[in-house]
Amino acid sequence: MAAEDSLSNLPTSQLLGSVPAVVTEAKSPGSHQAPGANLQIFPPNNGGNNWRGYQTLGGNNEEQGQQSADPSSNSWNGFFSISSYTQYFNVDTDIVLNRILSTFSPTSGDFFNKIDANPDLYGLVWISTTLIFVITSLGNCATYLIQRRHDSSTLWNFDVSYVNVATCAIYGYALLVPLGFYFLLQYLGSNASLVRFWCLWGYSLFIFILSSFLLIIPVNFLRWMVILISGAASAGFVSLNLRSYVQSTDLNMVLVAAFVLQIGLAVFIKMWFFP
Image (cartoon, one colour):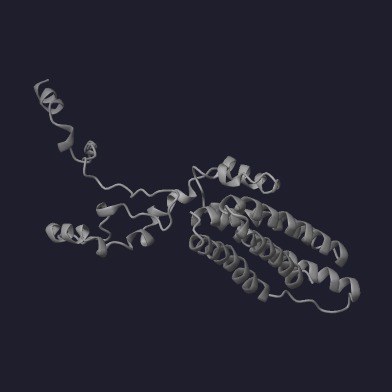
């Protein structure tokens, strides 16, 4: 009995094969957290002096503190920190669907009110990428149907160049056109928001995804009707929502330019991918 009592009194952490208990530690007040940023500002704020970037073990803490205190040494850190961009993808399925449905009512002109609290870049990336794959695959399918309709004996090959053209055209348009209007309105004295513009133009491309499925019909007149209606709806959505940044009638040419560019994109999609 004495031997059994002595064995039962042994600490379990000293026994062979035992697993030590997990000790949880509370986070210290100075623990690192992801830098925050204003949703209305782009480029994202890197969080000030709390972000020190990559640090090596055994580094000089005093030297690191001096580097972080220098604003010129970390002014570009927000561009290279993934956590600075996570706020622009903080949306769920219901929010994305609600914003997509807004593109089908272009006359409402209240899209900026819906995204005011949380403008996102998820729609820009997801919709643009989806449109690239859709017009590439369906464009080749439409070419095949037209070729089979005229001469079924001719050998048909998949045109890989559609991928390169679609990638450059769609990504370039979705990124550069809003950027151009942002600088233009800033120059004209309007308080424009780059993230809001990217969000607006990104969601405006969704209607072209749906219209692409109708463009595979091998009837050229019907194709032109579909693409012109889709382009007009997308252009109206952009220009009418952009109207809130145009305060005077002298700047109505900005709205006309946005409308014409959106129609131009629709015509380009029709002529290049669905000839």
